[in-house]
Amino acid sequence: MTGSPLGRIVEIAEDGRHLSKLRGFMTIVAKGEEIGRVPLDDLSAVMATSPTTTASCTLLAELAVRGIPFVLCGRNYAPAGLLWPVAGHHAQQRRMEAQVLASRILMKRLWTQVVVAKVLRQGWALARTGRPADAFSQLARQVRSGDPDNIEAQAARRYWPLLLGGDFRRDPDDDGVNGMLNYGYAVLRSATARAIVAAGLHPGMGIFHRHPQDAMPLADDLMEPFRPIVDVAVVGLLQNGKSQLDTAGKRVLAAVLLQDETTAAGRTPLSTCMIRLAASLAQSFLTGEPVLEFPHLPRVRPKPEGGGGPVF
Image (cartoon, rainbow, N blue to C red; front, side):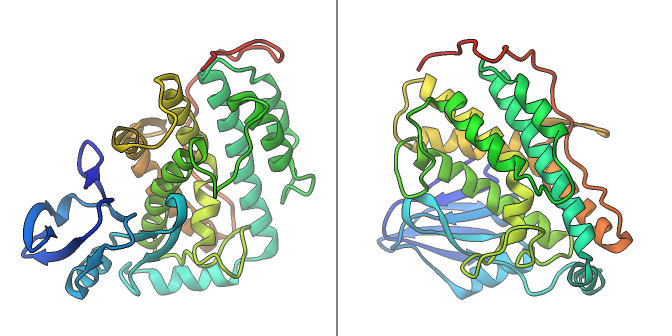
């Protein structure tokens, strides 16, 4: 069992673990003996990465009632499924109706804000790690409603070679660096899904992402601007000599949710920023005006295009 420093995310990684509820705790049992327990009040997500993990229905129902995602991970830590509550938010029906009825124009304007935030955050990630980043603020200014020019893809084609070298290829089925990225993104996805449900929205109705095999396209939409935060954490692991995901690396990646971000209300953990973002999306659906609330980017002096960066 691994978790973040404050125990907010618990991963069940070892084989043969059974999870159940005992009063106000989630208990972990191996070979008939309890080996750990975590207060339910401390949980923000449970990730089962071992295929032999079992869980009681009582525990799963309690997690659902509390809005705590239970994430099932498939190959290489990519999320395969997520349990989320059927009901919970007091304004859920009204907000979901507004979500369903949202106009195409509003969806395009919302996606524009997401893409701009993502491209700017990619520039921040490059500058933060000593890579050339000047082009990304310019790319962000070129995003038009709905991103018809696919600036998101143009930025990605520049971003990955700059961040991880020209030989790197983003492949969710690969291990090594890709496995680290997958794990960090799974952490983001579970936290984003929880924020969406807490805001009274349905994670299955996306702004942009749509795929018959994707049960949470809205989570994939809203997590996009936060992916570079995971990328920076992965670069840090590589610089510290890590080439494969291990327990220490999992702790580092789970802790990204605790990273303080600058907002209009002051310094706030990333997990709280996700909750505010989901709430601002709900407000956007209700009013018809795109008012997505993203954290402010810290100032980092970018390195000019063509300059070198750290070698790892």
